[in-house]
Length: 521
Image (cartoon, rainbow, N blue to C red; front, side, top):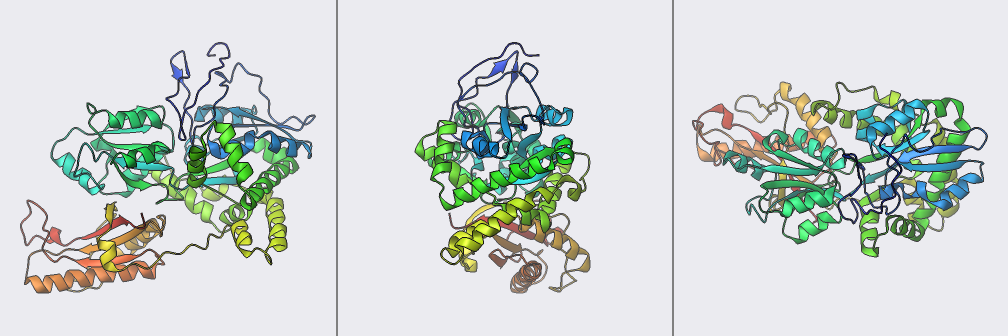
């Protein structure tokens, strides 16, 4: 389809690397995830031999890309361990997500590894059978503070737009960078994708270069490491990262329907072997670090960025997500973002998209390991269960109010109170409950919440100050009653910050802002 096979050395991606140089007849390869492998690129799926599961050899074909989180699937040691169960694994790079899904459907691949949003977007004939990782800080939204000195939060973008500045947004298309931009568009009041000229590039090194080009009026770029760290060192503001929203970018293992129906034992053995290796990595991560460093041709410092930016699932944690409805909630939340951004038409039935029956053996193996190590090493046992044991330190309201703003959440509706009262109107309670669920998606260790109450200029200043404070405290109490565990502060401002160009007594001044701020950074 694209001509003969090409062998091109490249280093592209989210951990280390130059811009991708793989172009074949004007069609470029785009990877999702940390792109870091230096090696051979096969230009056309139509030109290479393809096969699904082979009963005679036990071969499984798995499609992915050069994301470092997929390194284990490419490791000879992993394949050697699978061969003890008479399974041979062939990993192939397929950078086009639509093609990856199509090959799962036409039987020329048995498994794919991909991000949850891409799985939902392309709807292949297959189900999620395992969870790989979450990115926890490696992807981030960066503001061009050196060019726009007053730009330090998403709220500041509104003023730039109002001033008539031509603004651009740079990001790698069809990657988690684009999805993170869509999350901001849906979740934050001060960030609207329609306000920007979109500069879509192949990967983050190009977006980073665009951000540094003075002739380009780029206000925002979505980057991944090591460019996030370089941007921070250069004075740019990292306003939100996947550490702040640690469940936003999720990598999954998807098995074809044919494999699920016809090769159940083979699929069980595959997952058991994979999670057994991840259990070993928790006990001693040096082999995994060596694998990722070698696989991606990375420096030691870059490898540390990869390890720090990826939170791998254990089998018990993955199984728990499937059993207790956590994965279903993530599917619903991710699908909602895709629907609202026009990438999907409706939210699917989440429970129909995954199958946890093949995890049972892997979970049992890990539980046996926990039983052996718990007495001597309870900390290791906790990690194997997926328990981090992390808690958020309690902050004073003053500390929260002094923290760097991220932006105001886009509250769907209006928080209304009974006339002259601090009682939240019944009609606003359901919307506040939905808001509480949105807040829970943010990291309690890095994000705190400010509730800021305002009134119109009717009556005395002191009374309005008291009323706005009491109403803000009522919202805080309601959110805590819905199990929001974040540090939250209430601040009343009376009518000291009236909206521009609106009469002072206008009821529109009576508003409540839900502001996210960055802590512990």
